[in-house]
Amino acid sequence: MILCPSCQSIKIVKNGKTYYGKQNHKCKDCGRQFVLNNNHNIPEDQRKMIQKALNERISLLGICRVFNVSLPWLLNFAESVWNAVPINIGLSDWWLKQLRPKKAQLIVLQLDEAWSFVGCKKQKRWIWVVFDPVNRLVVAFHIGNRGEESAKALWRKVPAAYKGNCLFATDYWDAYKSIVPAKNHLEGKEFTYIVEGFWTGMRARVSRLVRKSVAFSKVDRNHFLAIRYYFYQFNLASLGRLPNQAVILTS
Image 1: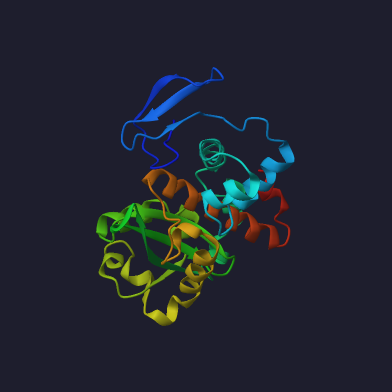
Image 2: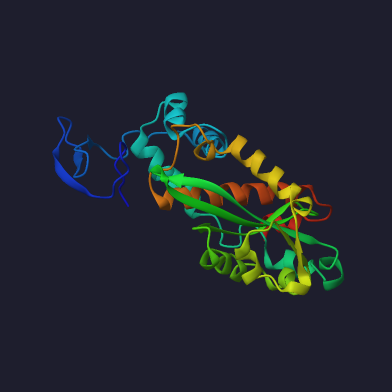
């Protein structure tokens, strides 16, 4: 998919050739003209550094300035990296099988949601997570509104190994009562302080989530992919610190 480097619109048409014979494109929304893959001869070691930069608090335009690449190239490269993230965000079947019921019963999963936006602050996108504070893992996440519909979508993504055995801690937001069984539900801020600290760390690492920033997401797809990529990298780092879990990183 081709995105406009200025407004990230997908309404792109071909617009003749450049002086050097390259295909020119034009955005029908903002009128920007650009050439795709204008920095195609980028060495592999630099690509790896750019990939690492995608998980740091630096905007896409900032990455372009640091590594001297064009925004169209970076958008295509970033999308290829983000799309490679597995649906399980690093929680392999092998890992879930190791989570025996007796082990899971010792875990109190913490559920919380954080505010974000796409395009402008009126277009709110709430990021819901289920966080395992014992192993420091993002078990599941969902991006949507703040109502019961999003809460139920989050609940459907919780792996059965956790859902059937753990307790669940939330704040007093009513939407949680529609998904968490009362017998397994702990309510109160005193039970969710770890996941709230997780949000603080995440905002320090993801530029598009900083409250006062111009590096915000312009389209929902990139918003979702970038956040999922962060959760995946976070989980891989956590799994790498657990004893005898090296197999997870290659499974």
